[in-house]
Length: 504
Image (cartoon, rainbow, N blue to C red; front, side, top):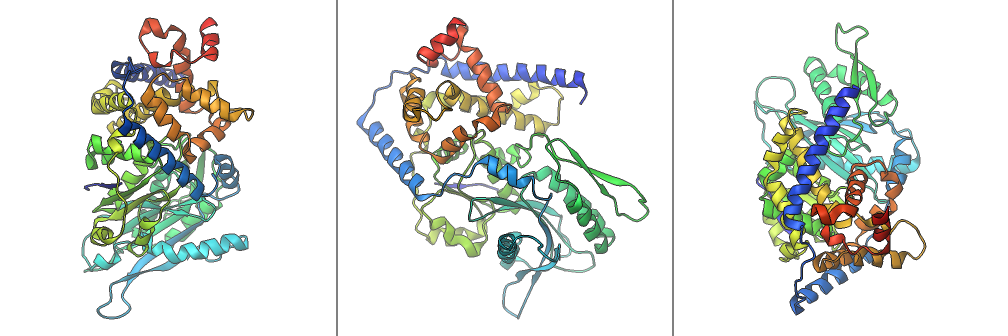
């Protein structure tokens, strides 16, 4: 599928929790308006069964092609051994000879020596060769200018073992007069936390405007700071003239799940119907290409659509900004999310890319209608949250909760059936058959074959206090009285385990 985009005080915590509880209940009511009778009596036409069979075969085939799932636990253990970032570089455009487009090159690097294992050095050296292309995927389109507002974007590098590194970039004009070319300041880190690194880049830009010599001491101070735990703050010496012993505080958020996310950009770029088609395609781990005119729009939309998958994690190729020189990647048969600048569209259309047109029929109909209903009212729901945060934050919370609610309705009962290693096949089948909706059972049969679902089950213990687990438990707690309250009726047939809950 190809998607084109156009572009802590205790009383405060208690108040926020109460308001969020009311907000979550509003979402629940909106979902129930559509999913109350989710045990639909649709007929299984030959066409539906054939399409379902083809999807199942496709996902199973894809699973055999891709590598083993990389658990979150392994990533977390490795992160604790690392610094806040791995290296910091400056990339500029240079013309080697007349008539040849500008070429991006690394002009500065910190640290100068990569003092780690041989494997890390080899990976880092390979990355340093390709990073300039990610910083300037539009290098051939540039000409010297006398004015350019700074631009922030990010990219992702995926290692051979599935590990990811984030590149946080600030593109701006160097100081001086007259027409000149921009340069990019890029921080490469294993930590996916856009807001934190955006603040660091703000400080870099501030120091660079005074003197480029102030940048490296500041970045050294950040690299030498201890790796912060979620919610913790690190302090770094200011290094500005006349600041004396002043320090800068940088806080890592306790939940960085939405740190890369600008849902407003996503909704302004895609229609709601197209967004749900993209979402459905990603759930079946298909191949999706985004295009946009601006780097910032491209990276923001890609990061936002990946955030919609929570509590599931995209396990495959993820390149929110793909350099034109690597365009052949979109011909690979394995799943990917790729972002391309619009200037690459002519070449893209020449490539042999398979396109599907069944996205409107992938999701269970009534759950999709419920999700669409909630998202259509997202601004109204955001206003109900009061002034807990700014409008952008309120909208992000609304959208996030809507998709969490969608997944809760779909797999919120998984903990009753799965988690143990014994008789896993029987547990999976019992989980699927516990749902009375035919369309949901068909969807789960395919979705349960994806790497996202496999990882979701494997990471259960790591998510015990996460938002999804909290919402799923609230969901299960509501089931004993569901017939009186008119909610979750499609799970009335959960079997003996659910009957046991009803007796308690």
